[in-house]
Length: 194
Image (cartoon, rainbow, N blue to C red; front, side, top):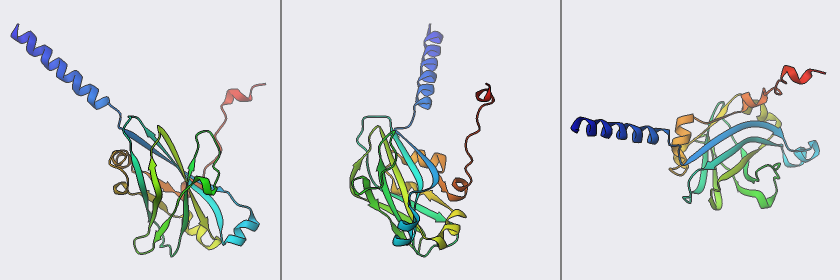
């Protein structure tokens, strides 16, 4: 009888350990690098550079805890950049990005010495079950080649503790080189049948 109770205890502890291991994190973060021109040529000349959608951040919150996001910091890896202008916009699910004042979360601050783009939110942002942000860069012609040769890494210490494990686990990166070489998805062979 004691052996059976011991066996049940070990089995129960093993089952509990397996459930804990399979438990998903409180938050999940996905970054999609892009290089999408949002401007007309005339507008780009007037403002000293093209507006480029550089990345989309999708944050999925799994629990009911209120999670406040105050800042996202991105470290640049590549040839040194003197000046960089960026903005972060909120995007609604299943809608195109509208880079207008109402959806502006913050303008970025470029730390030239440390080569870090700091996106400090102007107001408190509490994460919804799905929250989407879009990073828009103002890219002058002379900076485009330089940006396409490097990448940004998200700095986990600037995020709430609930998001840090997701970032550290995935080593999230915004690679301008990869996003500039994106090819259209290949169609399945059966879709060409007539």
